[in-house]
Amino acid sequence: MNVNDYISSGIVESYVLGLADEAERAEFERMCAAHDEVRAARDAFELSLERQAQADAALPPHHVKSKLFAELSIALAATPEQELNETKNGLNDPKKGFNVSGEEFNDVGQGVNASPERGAKVVSGTGWVKYLAAASVLLLVASTVLNFYLFRQYQDYSERYSSLLSSQTQLANNNRALQTSLDNYQKTMGFLKDPNTSVIKMAGNLVPKNGSPEPSSLATIYWNKSSSEVYLLVNALPKPASDKQYQLWAIVGGKPVSAGVFDMDQADAMLKMANIPNAEAFAVTLEKYGGSETPQGAMYVLGTT
Amino acid sequence: MGTTITYTEHQLVSLLKQRDNKAFEYLYDNYSGALYNIVMQILNDVDLSNDVLQEVFVNIWRKIESYDSIKGRLFTWMLNITRNAAIDVLRSKSYQNSQKNQSISEQSEFDIGGKTSQLNVDNIGVRKVLEKLKVEQRVLIELAYFKGYTHEEIAEIESIPLGTVKTRIRSALIQLREHLK
Image (cartoon, rainbow over all chains, first blue to last red; front, side):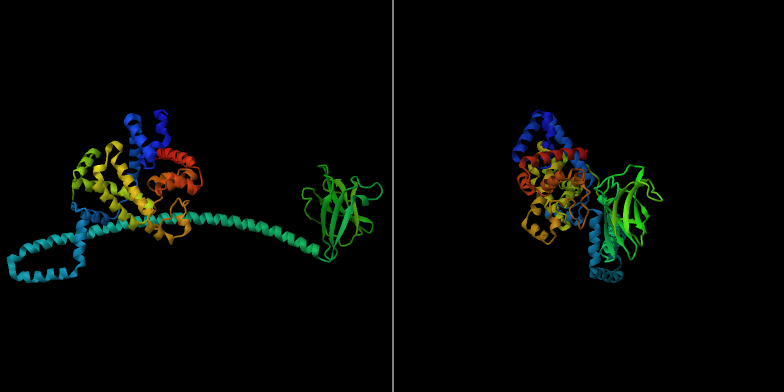
């Protein structure tokens, strides 16, 4: 393996991030010693990793530092936070405060001897101001952090809310579509189950005289005499030319009455035709597109009621 | 108020080896944030992370003699100490027990985001860059880097051949480097 292939094999990152095994580590250290390019690649990755980590650094709580340095017995350089803590300790001990002021009254009588102590108290007075200032800054920082955090959460929730909303809308639409088609089916079922609905088979071989151009043609009429509703189901009819349409006729008193034209593209559904209160027979003829006043074309199927 | 001192890495290391307190404080002030992040990313628990960070700096102070600049930068050395310490805690019995009460989904290895209760740790460091990887690569880096599983363990957990684990991790790492640039 040449050096460049070795460098771009991922071993550099694997080594630096501590994911390489013992053998890989040993080999990598040998390669680093032998090839400046390998070492340079490692340095570059380490540096970018460190930069990224530093850019994202968030300070740990201050007490971690004080505990750590106490454990190692290292004196910390005085920091504003420390003074703050000391002031806070004083605050937490109200007895101290009372004693001090008691002494102060006594000191008045003692005159000159008291003045060094009084000087000390002035210093502790400015400490209070510092404490207040530091506390308000801390409060501001804390509230900024909290605001940021809450804002992020808010963003997250509002994103989730709008995505839920859109999926809910879509579901509702689907539901409506399903409901509509279910309603249709239920209506059809109700119609079919109605005892007043009769079924009339219309067949090509029932057509008299010249017969049907397609003797195997078949269609079914579902006719409810009490409501006059007529449904047509096409079982088998040849596909008409594009300038022609089939037309359904009811034969009433020996005369054809149009029950409407129909297209073949919904031929597998029950087609609602015109209402027919009375008929001896039903027939389908092929007519010019749009239908005719009286049947002109060939009769394809016929069925008597 | 202290004066601001900056050291080169070489100066810092040699001062640390001489047990210079100021240098150690400088080290803490400059690196504790970055190292704290990595602990938080692994443990996602403020109290535990505080303890681990303290332990890490105690170890850095005590083991600085064993740091060898030939093998890499000081930060890399500290990062690996930190990651190992956090993973030791992660894989310890007591941590596992404390996590048992949480739901299965929070324990799942596919929980890439890592449910966060205290801080949002998804958007920092290596994890932020992870978002840019393919899911199957991200899972492997998550298991290897943030959970400390060996390649053999990962092969078993994910039911994929050991060789595939290795190549996928390597190719994920190469992409990570590109994204870190």
